[in-house]
Image (cartoon, rainbow, N blue to C red; front, side, top):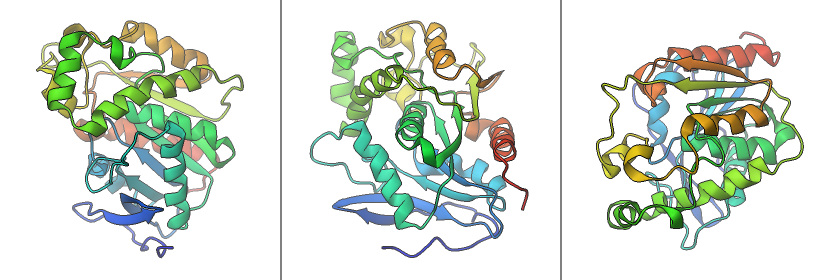
Length: 278
């Protein structure tokens, strides 16, 4: 058992991860405790993005909340298991890390892009421990085709250029989506969805690898969508009919490019679930 995260009032200029061993798996993480926390925040990164992608957000919220950032298997110093994990195992890994760091429920879960699927799965599996959820331009369940149905050139590009963990995450997206869409019980906790509408003039596809590094996979170039992305948002409407939806003129990685709406939404959720100001 590792000691509790060090108490601090503000984040350092750069986030430096530590390593926790959960069973035989190394997990790179950054944990923070506020002096008078309003909530415990869990952040799920987008595809290929490290925990440092939340730097600007946690810099503002460090005085108000306990915070856990981590890298999913294969990212940074988080080790990739020899065989692909069930998505539920990835969620359990986060829960064990929270326990290892003595960070107790209830939680507010924040997920960006592909991490939005992981955030939703965690919130469903441990609904009694989650008070609210923020989806930051999250990938809708059912949006991606099974990877075996990607066009041959996309499959070849992934095999040649994408790390193994990226291929596994893309493969897992369908399984997570199917599980979420198959849920019979509603998630009746507060949910905010931030949807980015980037400027088309500056957000054109750059190529498979470069777009992956940007945390974006574009349908028009790579043939990965099962349905049009705008239509796919309807699955989130069904899963969270009372969610607050905000369309923003913003980059997909808004938590880095323009974090103010993300910070504002988190504060709203902390207030909405009865978290008293520090």
